[in-house]
Length: 137
Image 1 (cartoon, helix red, strand yellow):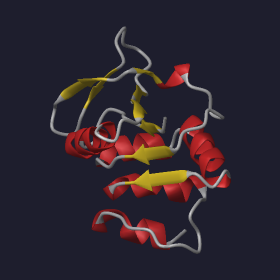
Image 2 (cartoon, rainbow, N blue to C red):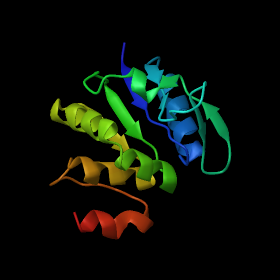
Image 3 (cartoon, one colour):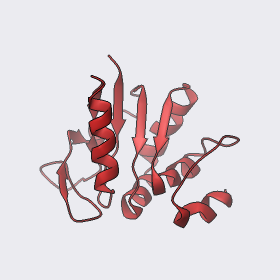
């Protein structure tokens, strides 16, 4: 069975999380969505439009060397920034990328690729608001 990890943090764009999760789930893949929240009893994230989403688990419950067929970093400026500045996320993305597995970023989520120093020499798409930051890498 294929596996996917879709990251979520406060400020994640809810549509980018929900649509990609729904699409992947339709393929019968096992999908995990960990939250980076560290203070709540529930792994809750408040998304960019105020929608509250309860994730499957806390990010701390994962190992940075856990393998998935796909890892996705959704956009949403605040959520993408949180993930791009989290060393655990960057280690996981580097590990995944170095194994030759799929890493996907949506919109501002591409900031994590720059911080993880992956994808150089390839094509990358992003939200126009983060384009200059990616080009400076």
